[in-house]
Structures are given as C-alpha cells and as structure tokens.
Length: 137
Image (cartoon, rainbow, N blue to C red; front, top):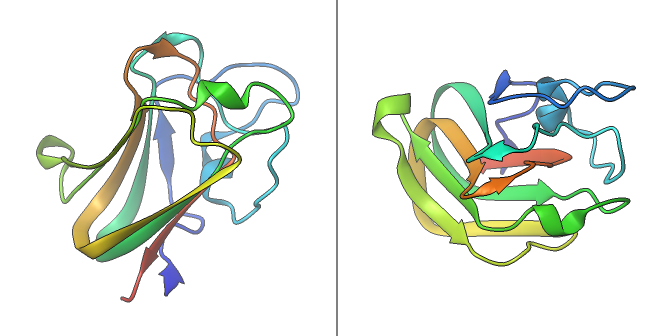
C-alpha cells in the first residue's frame, strides 16, 4: 500500500495562528510527530480539512495521528468523506467518541475518490497532526 496523500495540497476552513504557526500542508508532510506544531483550525462550527489527492484512487485505508501533548479530546465526532468532486462526497467514516492517539481506518472495499474531507460535527477546533491515505494504486 502507498500513502497517496504524502505532500498533497490541503485546505482548512481556518488556521489557528499561534507561533510557530503550522500550515495546512503539515497534515500530509509524512511527519508522524504527535506534538505541536500541528495544523489546527480556529474554534468554529464544523471545522474541516480537505486533502486533494490530485487524481482518483481506490482508497483502502486512512491513518490519523492525533495531537497528544495538548487537547487530544478535541478529535471527536470525526466524519470522513471521499469523492471525485467536492459536490459528491460520500461519508465513509463517522466516529462519535475521541479517537485516541492514533486511528487506523480500513475499508472492506476500496472507496474511490480524489478528495478526502475530514471534519468535526459541532463547534470545536479541528486538530490533527498527520493524515495518511492508503491505496493499492
């Protein structure tokens, strides 16, 4: 399996500005460090991060590294959607409790799409240190 999200573009609904200021691209930079700096949004309703894989893949799994030096409980009610366009995203994961230090999601059948959207339902900070998206290519 290959991490097809490595160094791919990321957009976030907002970015919390606290030195050293993280960038959205740190979400897919291959660094599994679970301490600050990690990309995180401002406190907002339904904060999101969208990874553009730049082409469609059959996604077999996703690995998430949560921030553990502060506030790991923020990563709760996490929803992951996948699709070929931002208008046709399909929910493939819905986790209502905190995910813990890391989270591995494996799909029984590949989920096809170019975009991977992660968001929290509710008002919260979206704080994630790393996301890896796996495909058999």
